[in-house]
Length: 180
Image (cartoon, rainbow, N blue to C red; front, side, top):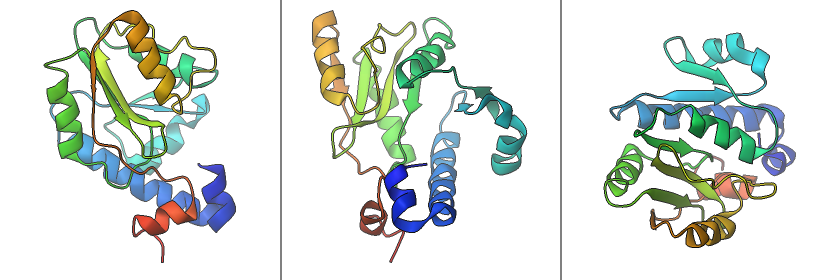
């Protein structure tokens, strides 16, 4: 959960909002063709995840470490030659149409980025094997600029989706109509 959101509205309400957004995201991805893998942490939380989101999902524990190694491990799990789209932020306006657009973009270019309005990434996608984008020191989803620079260094073309607002604070939740 987001520290600022939790500080603003309390852990119970922040968890409720997180669950609402997770359910919306799962609805959006389940409407797409393709395999859905849910990466979770901590590794011993599988039973809790199954209770929370239900059985039938491909659940896998995240790798340890900061976000770069976790994303790299997830990307390496994708079979060679397949598309890979990772949704990595809680965005109230994320939709099946947005994910379908990302999928369509990958028919033209090797990488798609979904920027947040504050310069993070809510989505990253590509073809497996992905280039080494996550080896930047302390890669995090907040490295949109660094990811663009790395793609330029590697000479890899990409396209970007429209920016979406992610949920970091009570202000963001109010702007999304999730709090009054």
